[in-house]
Length: 223
Image (cartoon, rainbow, N blue to C red; front, top):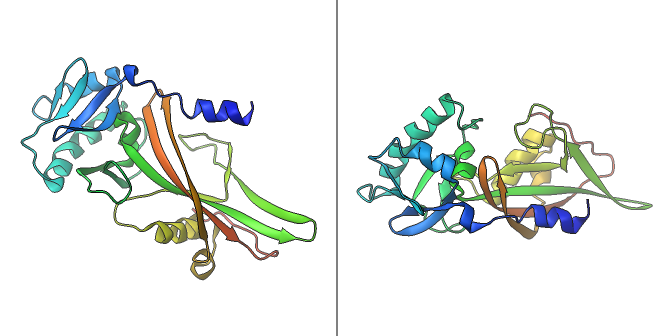
């Protein structure tokens, strides 16, 4: 598979396959019809129509919305509709740092098609024969892309944590990189995509960092 094939696979979103998730009259996500039908059970919270899923406008602030929807996703996880659970919460927002309307369990974000964010860290080493890159292999127990190659460090961006602080946290957890070294990471760009899958829409922006490592440093997974 070529790079172009990969790029196209990561951008296969077709809006006609989804219903907009509306909060206070604005679209914050894209919901597949099958998942929208599950939400119909909670009619006091969600109004489900042929083209939209509307959160009850009587829920007027971040805290109230968050408390109202949390039990819904817990129940759908208990039923196996939401197949995994992370225990981290993500903001429901239009853009990183913008005002969030509520927060939801990370595992629910694809099912809602809301914007999500993460950090990926390239581990680079200068050697006599050129630049080398550390490449990780994902656990076969992971619910997403088990056994696939990955960047040295990567993680989702939860509520209440800055980007570089998250780089440091994930670096310690996933590669046993000391905090002082991890803080030398440099932001180098972003990658955004909207990828459709059976869970829904992965609507992500990834913040990319480079970290130059000593030649004798060996990453060690401690997660």
